[in-house]
Image (tube, rainbow, N blue to C red):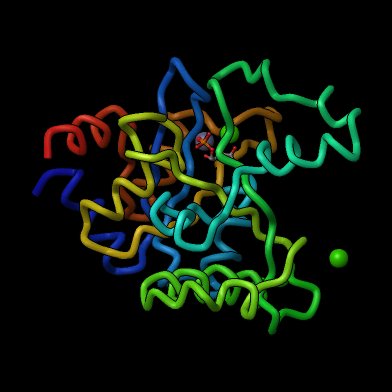
Length: 224
Ligand code: 5RP
Ligand code: CA
Ligand code: CA
Ligand code: ZN
């Protein structure tokens, strides 16, 4: 069994995989899990052992179905009324051409939205809505702003962008599960930087997780 196959199996079992994007990009390891299986315990694990931003990635087909724009598109549209927003245009991201950020949401059943229970509900119910293709429920089920950032996967996923967003969604597609996944960067509180690949590797071994390279996932996806 290859590491890639172990990764598919882990995702299907609701377990974390670790993914390093690329030395030429962020150079970060994200914890990734299929959103449909997310529980409050998964959120606690990401808070305690990753510490980055907990984001819910959505396949572009789903984003189209619920008409979910990128945050940049929303700000562009708001520029008419608030022209100074134009000055914030993200034209200088050092590691990529564009970010995948969209809006932030909470499930309407949330109280504050930030607890492990609230975030797990927001994330898993989003995956369930997509899986069951209840696209018309989007606004009925979620409110915005909220505490879970939605990331919009690029059209064609890794064919057009090589971020953790697309890499995670490509992994879900290849594993045959609903392409909605959580990504959270592993951070090192000792250095104030991203966790090194060596330390991520140690964490993976200790916790029996696979650590995959973005490049290998991208190649597998492009060779389907
Ligand atoms: C959200 C991020 C992370 O880097 C996450 O991995 C998604 O971004 P990308 O697709 O650019 O890698 O910025 O916290
Ligand atoms: Ca990033
Ligand atoms: Ca609050
Ligand atoms: Zn990333």
